[in-house]
Length: 490
Image (cartoon, rainbow, N blue to C red; front, side):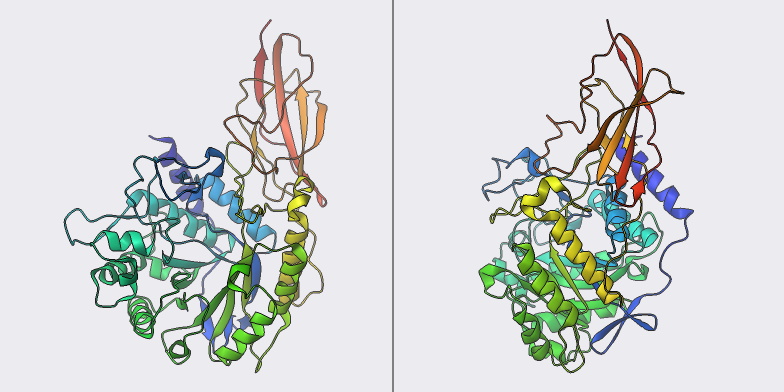
């Protein structure tokens, strides 16, 4: 039995005996999202990689000519649960993730897998990678378990994960043929939508179209070439397959007038970035006026600004109204979570901004990490009718890994753990001695192949030693982790 299968089986068994968070779907009342009879609004730090990770610590794959970090991996179920817990416990009610990845000719050389694979025969239908979708199953089931609604986009305009260009290449067509509703590429896109919506989750046993953790299907990510025919046909196709979930028009940088009157479109979105000259709070009122209170409006992504600028936009998302309509939600780009082996995943943008870790760490103040987390949590509270965010919950115990060398001790950090206390004993029963406090696992550019979370630099006589770790934040200290031992040789 492989490690992956054991982890997923454990996740499945655990989820199956839990009371799940949702028994209803998010619905739309004109320009509002509704959770039952209550308006549903949300703010957050965008978590694109809940189901697939770009591992920047490995650097770029030289076999991929596109020129950026191109090593990807699947998250473990423990990592997915840790990230979702961190989001929910810090106040997130909804999350938009990134797209289904499409295969490229360089995947084998870069040792990576994708969600969508090339047909086995010329002009055949694309294949859905079962290995990839098991991680998608896990994400959806864990979101349901912990109370996180998901926005799930299908295919990317861009080629970062493999998108429309790579899908079109399966059929000898051009990237813009993706938007042509009579093309082979569009037919393949329609097939992918059908297969995903009708997929049976291997963990929950439900079809995706019956999963209440899914809030909305998004036609795709930043679909700059969307046409009226493309959106109309795609939205109608989704609704013909799934009457439970909302449809988000993934068009980028414009509001399609036809979408405002399309009964199959529920949500209009925009993304704000400085390169598009729209990364400002005034854009929210412009979008609300264009939508004219006919549909729900969200800011699906914005970011790569200083914290003050991010806060100006977030406060506009909270407070700006037009004809009684306001933004249902807004996500700042972007979040990375704990590695199971220790430390955090991280990503550095071309602007110099790093991804944010929750709950935020003093060592990343140069990236204004704590300030950004705090401004998001304040907006969440305001959307819930409060002035200020509540205190963070006390963290749960971290997971201490087996120790081969006391100078290289690693643990999987606890959701919301700000820092850690390490204890050592010469006996499993104690007495325990505190050997380190205020240890952070949150630094950027952590490399698990060379780095460790903690090194015991004490002079240890030969013998067996036992270790345990506690997670802490401003609200308190966790229970002790599991205990691990190591033998120091003469």
